[in-house]
Amino acid sequence: MIELEVPLGERSYPVVVGAGARHRLGDVLPDGVQRVAVVTQASIPVAVDPGVDHRVFTIPEGEVGKNIATVERLCRDWAAWGLTRGDCVVAVGGGVVTDTAGFAAAVYHRGVPVLHVATTLLGQVDAAIGGKTGVNLPEGKNLVGSFWQPSAVLCDTEVLATLPAREYRNGQGEMAKYAFLGVDDLQDLPIDEAVAACVRCKADVVGSDEREGGRRAVLNYGHTLGHALETAGRYDLRHGEAVAIGLVYAAELALRLGRIDETRVAEHRAVVSAYDLPMNLPPGVDADRIIELFGRDKKAVGGITFVLDGPSGVEAVKVSDRQLLGQALEAIA
Ligand code: NAD
Image (tube, rainbow, N blue to C red; front, side):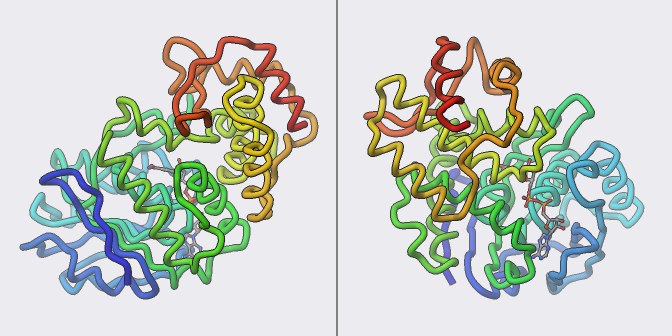
C-alpha cells in the first residue's frame, strides 16, 4: 500500500493507494464518529465497511444527476436520519459522486467531514484529490461549489477491474496530462504506482496553491480545448478523451508561439497515442465556434488564458492572436 499526504497544514490528509485500500476506511475515520452516511450510485459494485453505524444513500448516474436537487435530497435524508457534525460522509464512486457528496458535506450543518473512496481511474488520479466540490446548473458545469477538503482519500486500484473500458480510458486522458507536469515514465509503472505518482503531483500542486490563485491552474493543462469540445457538445467524447485532444492542441499552439519545438510536440503525440486516446478534432468541428468558446472558459479572466508548455515548464499564458488559435486547430484537424 502506498501512503501519501496532501500537505495543507492542520488540514493535511492521507491518500492511500493500492489494491484493497477501501478496507482501510475504519483506520482513517475521524475520531469519535458514530455514524457514517455512505453516498454512492446503484451501479457501483463497491461495498465499504466503516465499522460504525452507517447507511447507504444512492444518487443518480451521470452529469444530469449532479445538481442542486440531489444535494437537497442528500441533506434532507441525512437530517431525517439524524446525521450530526460529529459524524461523517463517505463518498464511494467516481468524480460525480465525490463532487456531489463533497459539496453536500460542505454545506450540511455548515460542514461535516467527508472521506472519498475513489472508484474510477479519473477519480483516483484527479477528482477525489484537492477539495474542489460542486454541482452543475442548467447554465453550465460545476457552476456551484466550494473548496472542502476531505479528511482522507482511499484509491483502491482493485475496484478498477469492474470499470467499463471507456471509463478506464477516460481516466488515462487525465493521466496523460501528468506526463507533462513532471511525472516521468508513467506508462511503464504498475497501476498503483502510476496512480500514486499522479496523486503525488496533484498533492504537491494543491499544497502550494489550494484555491487556484496561480500554480494550481497547471492542472488544467489540455482543458481549454477539452472544455470547449465538451461544451460544443455534439461530439461523443468523454472528458479524458477531450483532454487528450486538448493536450496535443496545447502543444501545437505552444509550437506556434515559439515556446516549444517539434520534438516536444512529438512527445505529446507519443504519450497520447500510447494510451490509445484520440489526438485529432472530431469531424465537423466548427473552428470559429471553438474559439468563441475559449473566451467563455471559467478560467478565462481578462482574455483567453491557456496553460502551455514552455522553457520553464507548463504555465498559464494569455493568448490574443486568434489566427494562431485557428492555425493550431488546423494542425489537429
Ligand atoms: P463518473 O463519476 O460519472 O463515473 C463513471 C461511471 O463509472 C459511472 O457510471 C459510475 O457509476 C461508474 N463506476 C464508478 N466506479 C465504478 C467501478 N469501480 N466499477 C464499475 N463502474 C463504476 O465519472 P468520472 O469520470 O469518475 O468523474 C467525472 C466527474 O468528475 C465530472 O463531473 C467532473 O466534473 C468531475 N471532476 C472533478 C474534479 C475535481 O477536482 N473535483 C476533477 C476532475 C473531474
